[in-house]
Amino acid sequence: MTDHLTLLQMNDSHGYLEPHQELFYAAGPPGYRTAGGYSRIAALFEETRDAHPDQVLAFDCGDTIHGTYPAVQSEGEALVPVLNALGFDAMTSHWEFAYGPEQFRKVAGRLDYPVLADNCYDDATGSLVFPPYTVCETEGLQVGVIGIAATIVDKVMPDSFSKGIHFSLGNEELPGHIAHLRDDEGVDLVVAISHLGFPQEVKLAREVDGIDVLLSGHTHNRLFEPAVVNDTVIIQSGCHGSFIGRLDLTVENRRVKRFDHELIVIGEEIRPDPGVEEMVGKVMDPHRERLSRVVGETRIGLNRNTVIEATMDNFLLQALIDVTGARMAFSNGWRYGAPVPPGPLTANDLWNIIPVNPPVSTVEITGRELRAMMEENLERTFSRDPYGQMGGYVKRCMGVTLYCRIENPPGLRIQEFFVGGRRLDPDAVYHAAFVTGQGVPPAYGKNRENLDIRAIEALERYLSRGPVNADLRGSVTAI
Image (cartoon, rainbow, N blue to C red):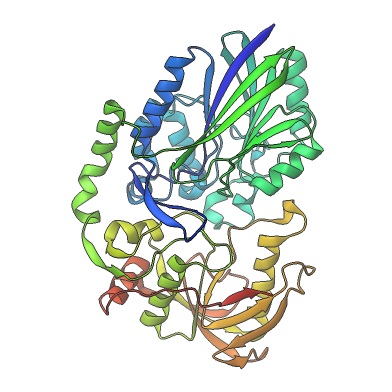
């Protein structure tokens, strides 16, 4: 007997309720155009379900309720009615823990579908915080769905994210759940929804048999063609809700016999769903006046689409140095943050750049610590073992210049390191700026000071001096 199943995937939407600018690559320079918006996603979902009644499942791979002003200010709660209207069948998580595990449990309890994580454990009891799997029924098929949350939450994120809980990689738990779903539940297919990151999930698929489809998240890959690894079909679908992945499966005898895939751009040609558009309006309207205020101008497109250095973060680092007088500045290698084309900058753009708006901090750090900190970051970004990749992009730097060989072993990647045109002195003490909780980990430096100014105010002060020019400077160069 032959059955058909359509899977829809959203990953790493980061709270982008409305259409926004997105960066698109081309044969020449990349360009900016409008994409995304939950009302458009809802319309796409509805159209797909109408065309294939009882044959469609939709999944969210996480990084959903954090990343924009209304998401952060409501600690994720503002998005719940909208997400329920989209009708997902299950999700997993990462930045959802940013408000603390208890708040995420509260939000999860209001969703009409389960949060799944086979690798998130309660410290006190050792039991799972969320169910590891669910079974979804379609016309003719039973689909077992296993969730894997981001393993890095308790390893490299602020301690408050994982208070009272801890995370495994989830790979050791998978075979038992797959066997149970196959043998005891009698499912026809096993689908994993994961937020480990594409390199990690490719390795996991090689190691674990029996996953028919793996919906990937975390690393913002735009996969125009699926990866097939150990008979597992893997897709990932960009970020910010600018793309939705569609995977059409032909199933025979409990196996995928054929698949077709499309990475769908959520563009302006998709007519918004009126009901969801109204819901989004109710979330956004109280903030529009504040967020639409023009605060400055940028002469260069600001984005975080590049691994080693990014214009958006150069803008942030310039502001940190300007407000502190520090010699250098560091920030986290975040991936999220909708691009901003050259032209006016609004308050909303600033909140998208750094939605938590942490205090600005300074620290005294030795040259030896600077080198160790950057070696650690390069390993977490480029580890040869995908399971060792536990960060975002390379730490953003300004006021330093370093040259590295990505292919070198851990701790030996940096070839040259300069500060202010002079070679790094391992015994010298340097004054560095960063945003509290990100940029310079607690293990490095001393005499930390949180200033009486937050990141958004620092950005606005810097903008008051004139238009931004945040070109790539080669602060970190792979040689």
